[in-house]
Amino acid sequence: MRSGAVIALLTASALAAARPAPFTDASSLGHLDSDEQRVWSQSNDMVLALQRGGVVYADPGVTAYVQGVMNRLFPQFEGRIHVEVLRSPQLNAFALPDGHVYINEGLLARFQNEAQLATVLAHEGTHFTHRHGYQNQQSVKDNSAFATFGAMLGIPILPQLVAASSVFGFSRELETEADKGGFARLSSAGYDVHESPKVFEHLIAEIKVEDIKEPYFFASHPKLAERVDNMRKLAAGFPPGGAGTSHAAYAQVMGKTRVDNLEQMLSMGRAKSALLMLADSEHMSELPHAQYYLGEAYRLRAQPGDAQLAESAYLKAIADAADFAPSYRAVGVLYIKTQQYPAASKYLTRYLELSPDASDRKYVESYLAIARKKETQ
Amino acid sequence: MRHASTIILMLLLSGCAQQQPVRVDTPRTEGPDKNYSVDLPLGWMKQQLTDKTMLASRDGPLLEAIYIGRRTAKEAFPRIKKGAADNMLASELAELEIAEVKSQDTFTAALTVLENEPALVSSRDAFRIKVSYKNTRGLEIDRVIYGFMDASSYYSIQYIAPKLYYFDRYYPDFEKSVASFQVVKK
Image (tube, rainbow over all chains, first blue to last red; front, side, top):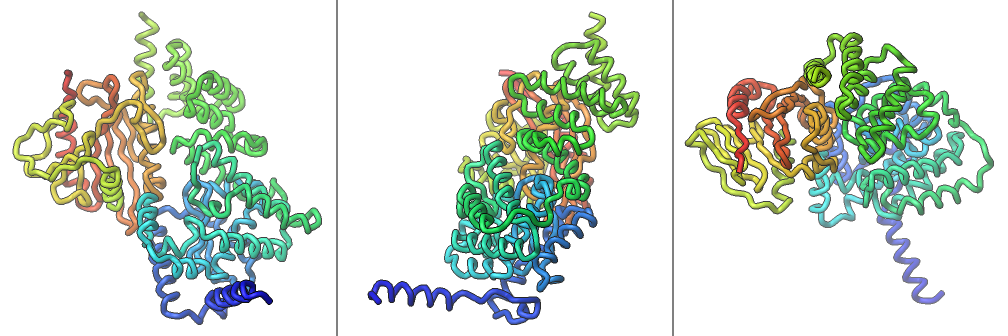
């Protein structure tokens, strides 16, 4: 054996020896050294902060469903990997070193089926079982960059914990290991592994529409396009088919989450992301008052021609549901903006008839006053 | 309270020219660029955070703070990368301001809008919103924001304080400041 190869082999062996062994089951979690115990303690501080801060999504049915998928993927760790849903439209998920996994409402809403959800949970669960957070925290010498990241995001997270969580992604090596380990879990649990590349395709589409230069979520290392290729290669060895592909079954569980997320996206001005979601014909067909939301997304995007698209969508929404008040308000305000005062009066009046206790009644009354004054001029 | 500190941190990171806090010893205060004047509560401390933002507080910005900001219409809502326009309705400006606050961090993203109504500030059509959210310790933070357009500028006047004890105690002082606010015509 050549000396270079020997050195490489020894180095690889030394590195492997330095890495903590993956947890094998729940019983193996009791043997932590003091450093790792400290990292777990920091994780708990963040768990408490997220709970106290009111950002955990309060739908027990959805949380139980997501937890059930995690338990199916990691049966040896049932009761030790805790999944929570966060009220955020960003497509993100992350794992803390102590086995708490967080997945954003936005990601849940965007998936088309359970197998896609399982792909992300398997990946994040593998970060935990393979102790990636602990390893990363040990390898990071300077936490100052992580401190800035935490402050910018407003996440109540110590710099050391940022390094130890998968919030900003890990090294290429650890992310690849999580992809492979997650893929094995997905396959063992009987899910259709051919759904896994689609998860990353959702992320790529989101990044394009939101013009995100460097995604900070779990998809930054290796690059997304490369991960789609990796997932396709891994899946190529498996025959078609598997569990978790029903769109209807998933939509039944996530119906309210999708509406909540869409409303959250629109209230945060994320019109392009909302349009991306609504471009999925399945989302449109399953969503109540979809045309109204489509109109709102066009109005908020405010590109040339969007006002006309919004008007058309609002009018379709009224045709679909004549007693849904927000559509009347939306089209009425649009007519105020375009100085079509008689039409504005008609729709805003109807809005107040349908919704006499509307929280925005004062605004609408002021717009009605403008419209009526202009009509008489 | 974390959110006030986040705002300050962001301002510090932006490399702006920050001045030392000074006590409010005369009622009338001019904005940093003399585009507006306002009565701030006597005895409070005021500080020019940037050439566009002024802070006033009695016990410290984590306990109660008034922020007055003026931005160009084009950069009115930087977090959501949206501008404002002179022909926008007050409710449209309110909608963008809510989106801006929600985009501040993980916790404000979960805010609840308690009130949203038309208002008048310096004789201009404005909005007034009141939102509430929790910080990392579960402490409820209330925030009232007035906003309006004047020609090519977007003005916002905000009051942020913990709901517990502080918000109600100094809210009347904030409302007096809003009532006294005047855009200076140059």
